Amino acid sequence: MKIQFFGLFLALTFTLNACKTNSTATVSTANIKEMVNSSDVTLVDVRIPEQYAAGTAKNAINIPLAEIQNNIETLKGKKVVVFCNKGVQADQAMEILKKNGVEAYDGTTWKNVKAIQDETNKNAN
Image (cartoon, rainbow, N blue to C red; front, side):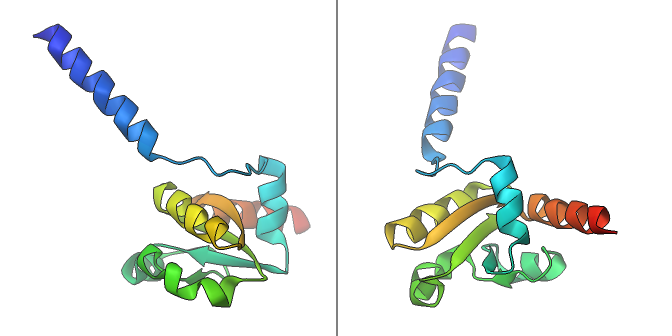
C-alpha cells in the first residue's frame, strides 16, 4: 500500500511539474527588477478582474489569462511583465505572448512585482 501511494505521489509530482512551463528566455532577478521599474514596460496582471481589484502592483493593467490571446495586437511592440497569484498563469501568459512575438518577462506573482516596486521606492527616499 505504501509503495503504491508513493508511486502515485511520484507520478503526480512529475505530471504537475511537467505542466509548469519554463520560459525560453529566463531573466535574472536583477534584470526583472530593472524591467519592473522601467518606464517603458507594461505591467500586466493576468488574474481575473475580482482578484485584480482586490490588490495589484502599481500601474498594472488587467488582462485576464483567458483574454490574453485577444490582446496580442495591443501588446506587440511593448515590453511586458506578466504576473498572477502564484506564477502558473503568468507562465501560461508568457508562452502565449512569446509565441506571438511579444517581448514578455515573467514577474511571477503580483506580490513579487509590488515588493520590487516598494523596495525601489524605499531606496529612492
